Image 1: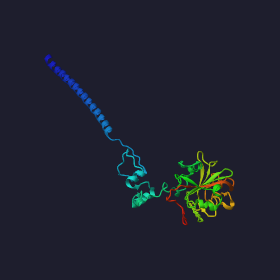
Image 2 (image 1 turned 90 degrees about the vertical axis):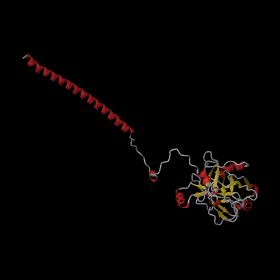
Image 3 (image 1 turned 90 degrees about the horizontal axis):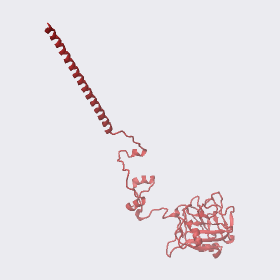
Image 4 (image 1 turned 180 degrees about the vertical axis):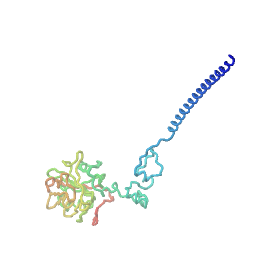
Length: 334
């Protein structure tokens, strides 16, 4: 009887032990699976982060109007060789590339502008300075051989045909006489000249006549002509003089009348000579600029004055050297 009861009990204990072992094994297996899942999850996250880091990040690009005309063209490197200057390019290729937009458009159809077409040098301020108005804020350098009075006038000759040329006194009214006939015998066909006069009040003034005189009774035009006053209240600080440009175009810059002395336009600076002696008249505004404060006379409040001296300086030319503007100019507009 006891034996029969013991067998079922042992069987039950055995079943219970087996159940505990299964539970422990199952729990262990679950723990292992959870750890594996956590490992896999961590690895997946790391891999995802690495992939995001390796992928190129989106960037923003700023486009300007000019970029649309170069769309699809490779961009130039930031560091490029220094582009040659227009002068260097002209020396290398024989062409100039300093054109304005309109010239560039014509260049598309007719080609680049040659530096020296058919062997002829181009028109420009360096070669033909007197085709441009007088400069007001630049001054010529001294020239060896100038005396004291020439050195006083030299700075005024910047960008003229006389800028670097030696000067000579061709007419001195106190020496030669206050007479128009004598005046023209001294100055005609000598080229451009600068007139220098001093009033009895001490005002030193005059004018530059680029075309000179020939005594044919014509009006000689030049946009490069100017009047001036040395020193005084109108000269800018550090400047030797004030210069007054030709206005209203180049015409009537100098009235070349054989019966008169120097006449810058009909009224800007007129020195008749002859019967009127040492008289000088000035009325600015019509043909030459007025003074900065609106004064319309080189002599200040006076429209006419008496002169103390009158001189004319021309350039020095070698024997046989060409002297410009030594004949009539009936159709000259420059």
